[in-house]
Each structure stands twice: as C-alpha cells, then as structure tokens.
Image 1: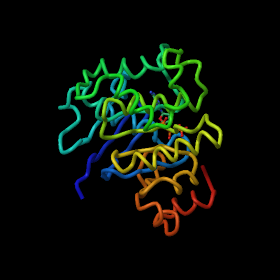
Image 2: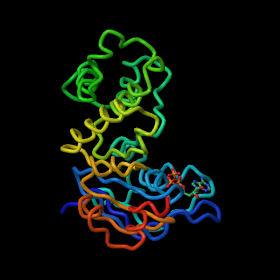
Image 3: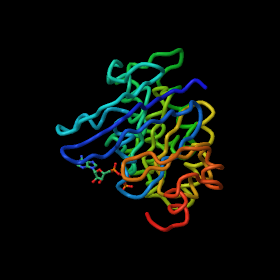
Length: 249
Ligand SMILES: Nc1ncnc2c1ncn2[C@@H]1O[C@H](COP(=O)(O)OP(=O)(O)OP(=O)(O)O)[C@@H](O)[C@H]1O
C-alpha cells in the first residue's frame, strides 16, 4: 500500500524528558488511524512532531525520520507542510474574527487559487462540515459567538478549506457533548474517503466506532498497531490486553 506518512525510528525529547522512543509507524492513506494510550504516553507530541510544531520548543530534540509521500518533512517548506497536514486541536480555537473570515484568512494565507471564488470554496467547505445551514445567515458574526461544537466544526472547516491531504486531530471531541461528538464522528467517517486522518482519543468506544486502524502507545513507545477490529478483539501485546481490560490508564 502506498503509505502517506512513514515514521522511522522517531524519537523525541524535550530537555531531559524522553517523550517518544524509536517509533516506527506507517500511516495508511484515506483511512482513519486512532492513536490511543494512557495520559502522558506521547500522543499529542506525536501529532506535534508530524507537523513540526514540537521544533518550536527550544529544548526539543527530534531524531529519526518522518517521510511525507516519500520526502523527509524537513525538506518541505513549513507553510506547505502545515497546509498539507492540518492540525485540529483539543479546544476549538477559532480566530477572533467573523465566521467567513476564519476560512478566508486561511485561504489567503496559503494562497489557495482555484477555479472557484473564495466565497464558493467557503460555502462548499461549510457544507461539507455540516455547518452551512446553521451559519449561512450569520457569516459576518464573530466565530467566538458560536457554540463549542460549532466552533470545532469551523476549525475543521478552516483546516479543510486549504485542501490538505492529512488531518491530525487531537481529541477533537473532548470538550463536546454527545450530540456534537456524533456530528464530528460522522464528519470524520465522511472525510476518510478523501483524507488521511490521525485522531488522538481517550475514548476507546470512539476509536472502535470510527477508526480503521488503532495504534496503542505506552510510555512513548508504540506497543502495537493493527486494524481496529483486530486490535480490540485480538490484541497481541500483554500491555494492550491489560489496557483494554482497564487494568491501567
Ligand atoms: N514541552 C514539553 N516539555 C517537557 N515535557 C513535555 C513537553 N511536552 C510534553 N511533555 C511530557 O511528555 C509526556 C507526553 O506528553 P503528551 O502531551 O504528548 O502525552 P499525551 O499522551 O498526549 O497525554 P494526554 O493524554 O494527557 O493528553 C508527558 O509526560 C508530558 O509531561
């Protein structure tokens, strides 16, 4: 299979703290990969390393390799890397501007040009994210006035409007209620036909519902990755079995 993202012997430390330890992982294209594991096992750091946010920490040391479509990510201009690999944070972080301008800003920043006008791209992306009907009469309203669930869908739309190939999502539903969680899970399932999605989640049921593959981390190491079905029904490592039984984490 043509892998989109390949992590080879990836280790990450910040100062004296070793966070990720010799991680080898091939992330399949146009699938959903859930990254699970107990608090502090390095899930967020994994996402921050893939889009090079971790390097903004002065004490960070990254070794090993991350290949995006066969190319080391350091060789890809940073703005392009972050356009192609979007990151959605745990807390929705809309820009303090209008709903429309949240997307227009991203489109202008990344210089996205296409046959469609800015307004057409924005409308299509809001529709894709199931937000258009809710906001079409309030596009000039501050995005900060939206509900938490709407803000998160807007942040996903902001990442998507610049046509990424990969979407990294760090516990995108952790601050949302069941209804908004379901809307985002349905959106992830719909998007997975066209995007490679890596989602960090604490919610094992969520991983079961939406992920094609699941990767289990413990203390900075990848313990195992398998299809979600296989991982949950037939975990290979003793640590995975114990985690699934709720013995720790
Ligand atoms: N910038 C940093 N400097 C020092 N230590 C850090 C830094 N970032 C993360 N860590 C440490 O690295 C470990 C992994 O953190 P990370 O946030 O990646 O874990 P996580 O699995 O996402 O945790 P959680 O599930 O609680 O969000 C933790 O022990 C954390 O304290």
